[in-house]
Length: 386
Image (cartoon, rainbow, N blue to C red):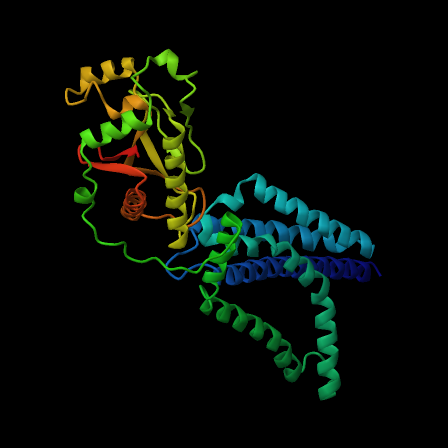
């Protein structure tokens, strides 16, 4: 009898170990399925020329295993159905908050937006699989036994047809990877809608071929005459600029960036400030019409020069004029080499940004709103409002 009890305890121990192994295999299988399902769907939105960073993939692996462990070892043990799904909803919300807290949605820019969405809904896949997988296998196994009138699950026919769903899942993953990039345009549309509130499908194109250094050749005398006509009556001192009723403060905003000024102060007459704002809007609209993000901004490098800043500048630049157009609040310099990139969305090259800036300045000049001088040494456009 003692031998029988010993044998029973050994069988129980063996069954426990076997059960533990089966549960471990099922947990690993669930986590792997979660990863491949998330990765396959996410890659549909990634452009063919781009790839998912290795660090990103590693992070998704970890998230899938953590989610799989929680769902298999804890969630499935909740007996009350309503409590189980309440816990599932709470976990999904917590999961999204955690991703947002760790700046997951800012990483990788617009090329990964569809992939990020696939990761976001990953826990939902896990809950659905874990809640239906066992019931599905039981239903499917009984169906096979009834159709083929099988008495044992060890029959080769039964084992063959039980492998069919696994084969279909494998084919689904393989097919999913072959579809990589097929929805990349949709992903770009989603990102553009989030950034801009609208969608366009315009494609980039070559800018007009113009010799802007020759077109932008309005002489200093011409600009100085316009400055005196439209701006301050005479150069002012630094302390007068802040409270001068003819001047308007300009600051970095959504249309342009005002760099740290060393030899000027950020003030313009209202007419010049309006010209600058309109150029910023036209610049961003032109980018958007070519499929880029409106978040790009050009850089203002010089604005109003006071008597003090003129004296400082003349100490370091012998070519600077004591009677500069900048002294009248009508003139500004815009760098054609320095731009602020967008936080998200498609980023344009410096050459593209420069060409678009030239086109905007050319349009404003053609409309009779300003004079423009192409400065080679200062790498800027010297612009005076008309």
